[in-house]
Length: 402
Image 1 (cartoon, one colour):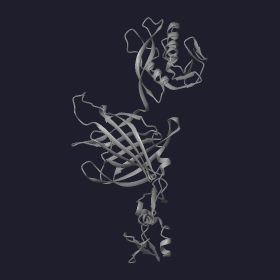
Image 2 (tube, helix red, strand yellow; image 1 turned 90 degrees about the vertical axis):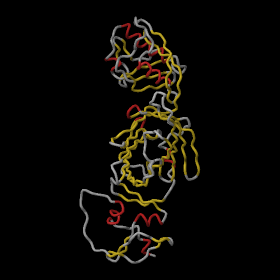
Image 3 (cartoon, helix red, strand yellow; image 1 turned 90 degrees about the horizontal axis):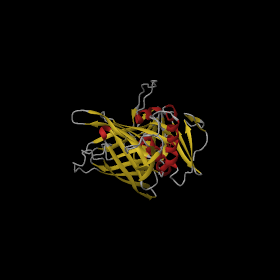
Image 4 (spheres, one colour; image 1 turned 60 degrees about the vertical axis):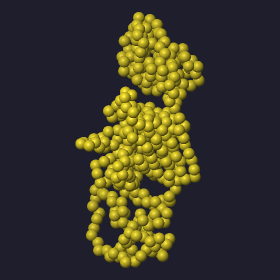
């Protein structure tokens, strides 16, 4: 079967018929072909789709024949490239998309005060797949008056070159399909695939998906934007998946009985989350000394120093205490090394400060006493917009404070 060995050398015509790509330049032309009456077998399996004869050459459908050879056909819609690949288990690139530490949690919020929380409970490996088991709960927006089942059960399955989501839930603002391929390799912009998905009412849909964008974001993490469209309706979904984190946002066409509109949720915080009490030092109303307020703060990945500064930015909750940081101050970065905590504030830290020698001193005392309560911190270096040497009123912030 020498003819079979050449079936992968197919023309742009066959690719166009198979993948349906479009181009700004019209390269089509009319040709006369003959429907072929020959039968084509691949490894003793019959090619069921039509083939045709043109200029003495038999043309066959690339996808069906490739799959009969145990290959997978890929298509990149951006660079108009078809690929024929061995079907392999892409564990390394796919697992890099998700956290690897048990106890990792996600907190999401979104449309109309929606929110849900999830935690990674188990990771199970075998030679051909990896399964992440996650449980959670949708926020009760009834104030405790509802007895609805708000539980969430999700499995992320790495199989072949796919990351698949399987879920069981009643009220999660997520896909209307309980099983969906979230992303496929190669993890590059333009990668496309199609899949059949069944909604909660048992209706089947043909979904066309594409990796729309790949970008580098915070902490040098790669982030992927994926679009999913029902080819027979206006329904769509769009997700953002970030390396080491997983899903950071979901938007979908929310279909109600009389209307439809986009709605979804975004990641509020994620990591190894733990709530613990922290002493936050705030100025008393007279402004001449600081006093501790105990606050339960959410600690992310052990970052107690970050949580403490965020607590100072939020301001006090106790009567008789006032804010120590100027309105609009943002925490740009914070790190701890060899007993030195380096805190980088936005420019509002100095520009919006009310001034006065006493006010400047209690602001610094608030920061230093709050941070040096932790055994790992002995000194504090304050930066403004990434630079040392800013002035808070009359105080030069060029050296560590202790």
